[in-house]
Image (cartoon, rainbow, N blue to C red; front, side, top):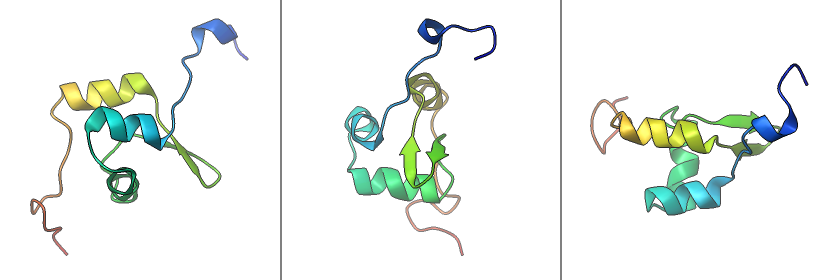
Length: 73
C-alpha cells in the first residue's frame, strides 16, 4: 500500500448492509448500481460499497431516474 496503513483504509461492504441501510431490497440495490445511481465498486462480479460514500450520497439527496419511477428511454 502507499503511505496509508491497513488501519486507515475503510472496509468495503456488500449489498446486504447497503440494502438494510437504505431500507430497500437487495434487488433494488443491484438495479440502482446497473442504472448508475449508487456509488459502487466492482470487483469482478461482486459489488462493494464504501459506507462513507453511501452516507454522503444519502446526505446529498441521493439520485433518481430523470423520469421518476419510470425510467426515460
